[in-house]
Image (cartoon, rainbow, N blue to C red):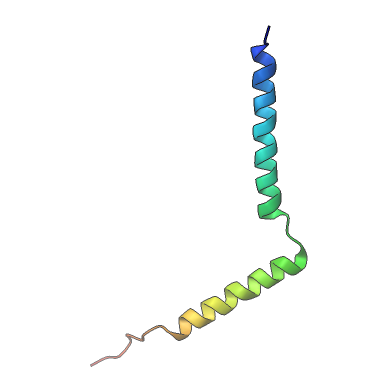
Length: 59
């Protein structure tokens, strides 16, 4: 005999573990990694801003 209640609880536990693993991967970064990613994002913004075409000319 197979208990549906136990199967449901086990399935929920596995799903919660998957979510936890994904969150650890997404948010569980060291201070150095966060700083590196922030600097990289800032450099990308500066790089893209340098390639914008100015449309401020009045004629």
